[in-house]
Image (cartoon, rainbow, N blue to C red; front, top):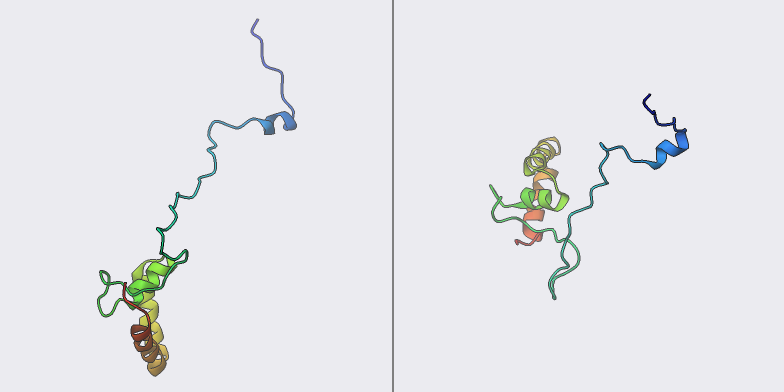
Length: 99
């Protein structure tokens, strides 16, 4: 005769982890900034991702999204709010520092 394990109740089953579950992923380690560097993110215009001025690339990097998404939103805003969108872009070009 073969011995079968005794059935377990719901409390005993919840204590065990199934082999398919993995521990929750940890965020990547971020080293502290070097001395003299700020502990916060800065909004800067990009110099390497800049078809016109780097404003949309800098905003995209600051927000952590694809630059194409920010560019499409900027074009839609410029068309829908015709003079205001263009003026806002020009102001950001003048105010946001380049990296």
